[in-house]
Image 1 (cartoon, rainbow, N blue to C red):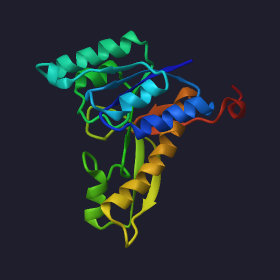
Image 2 (spheres, rainbow, N blue to C red; image 1 turned 30 degrees about the vertical axis):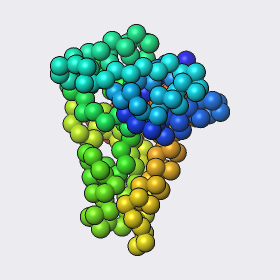
Image 3 (cartoon, rainbow, N blue to C red; image 1 turned 90 degrees about the horizontal axis):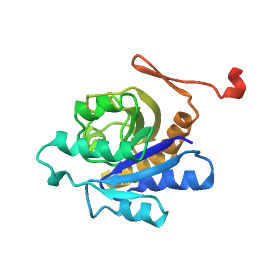
Image 4 (cartoon, helix red, strand yellow; image 1 turned 90 degrees about the vertical axis):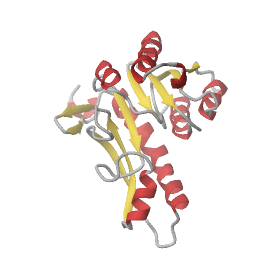
Length: 208
């Protein structure tokens, strides 16, 4: 069974959606470890409540990003992870980390990429006055939210919306498409072809 390591910085609601999918049997993989750079992150408690190994590696304990990431790599590799899953991890990753896990890092972003990359994407969409927003899962490259897109979900921006109500509806879609993305990955059905991710049919449809 393939193993993932989940990196978080806060509450871990996407982590919870992944845990729930694993425990229900709809997602067949092992959450080998949850790592947070924030010792107060509730996501650590979520992991511990489900018997998942959890570690805190504070970036403030290291003199630079590379040394911090070197410790992340050492820890993740120690757990034998096949994929790194970013679930609200509020640190920009350097080329050191991205190259080490080439095409083995997946992130979720609360906007329809390539629109509104970076932080506060929901506020960016709301302030811009668009009619739609949503969320995207993507492989991570060395840019900011620029990697090949896997799945996306559209969320309309309603006239009565506030930033908070829009963010809440986007989050519900995140909780739906992140486990689905990981299911496709765990089944070996994601193939990166240049800028695009091809989703392969199930084995029983493709003849093996």
